[in-house]
Image (cartoon, rainbow, N blue to C red; front, top):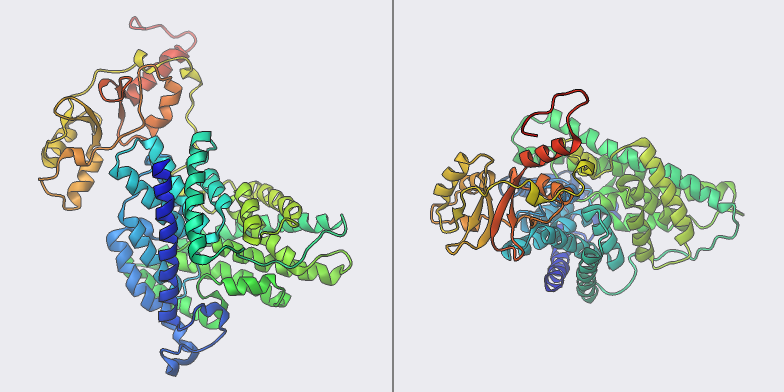
Length: 570
């Protein structure tokens, strides 16, 4: 609980600092608080350039954040949430500490320089990195490390949007993908803490102010249902365009990666010159769309332009989220749909703004396939309960349409393209009832925690599985060290005075009476090919469990094929 409160406080303060950085860089590079609502205005810092200055702002910003990301934290490139999902699913919640700082500066520069991305993806990664860093400093076990990462993600969303419930469900539905009671309580504490800090800095008021709305005729639900289906298809289309443009940028660029945002910034600048409403996050334009201030043709242009601008920003190596762009696309789509419905059947269709709000939630649900988060975040953004039934109708249908059209979401597709399926579940039926004590192996030679890193690396290189336990002088268990982490530390310039205890990590505890079906997921997510088996106090090693022993247990449980001779050892 104390750690959850600490992570929530850090995420709330991080959100304040991040938004300040965005405002600072936006004013510095564009001369306006939010250039997306300024039209083709000139930059007061360089008035002699007129509105042509937008050709240069993405280039200048890319020149700053491109080398920063390439040198210090390459995982800060892109929209951030997939990296957090991967860290929780496959790396025990470990995120490099420098990610929080690099992501903050890089994303603020990208958005301030005209990058058409959101601030919510970065703050999720920033908050998650803070949680992971705190867990690493205190050497918490991996299962608690994952919860701290989710606490940071929830706190970031809660403080940024003034939406504590949405922060909780975003973390549970997308990051942890689990609603266990213990982790839920910790995430709630973090989200509430961050939200209190955010409200103290940004005020306590809804993000959007929707028009008065009421469903006057039950047939209007048909309009909402059709909008949900359309929005689900648009959400999938946005996902595919995003990665299609990224592939095109990968194919076209042959220079150094640090210079990619500089060269690509020229293309982004040309787009901003034509459609300045794409500059940055674009919340003023979103509010105007929901307010019904644009014609249908311009709203359709905004949908297509936002897809292109966001995809191009990510494709050239920019840093920022896709959460806000999906809301922007949904607002413009919903407003265009609502305007058309109102023109066709004015006696049945409600206000345009209501369709814009429902479109926001539905497109996000179609892209991210997180219906619970979509419903709750739209309710908290508006503070308006009257749209909840139409909103739920559209979001459920948008999620169904998305699932029918695509197996992946805007977040998971990035990981699947790397060959990672975070939804993959190991087969555990044959392991039911078998405990670790029945299959564990002898403990391999342990490393003394005071051993210099170079000597430990040599021992790890000779080990069978590239992983060894680390113990104190009195035999107390300190964690495990792997050949990979040792190599990474040495490649980063770590010197011989560093001891192996400093790179040791604590995997999820495994005991002799633990069921093998519960151990398999922990073993899959382990650094190497083995895990220590601990006593009841978790301070002494009594055995060792490996993939080979697990496979042997599965083979014995399944039995030999029909007609095959039974080995004598069986």
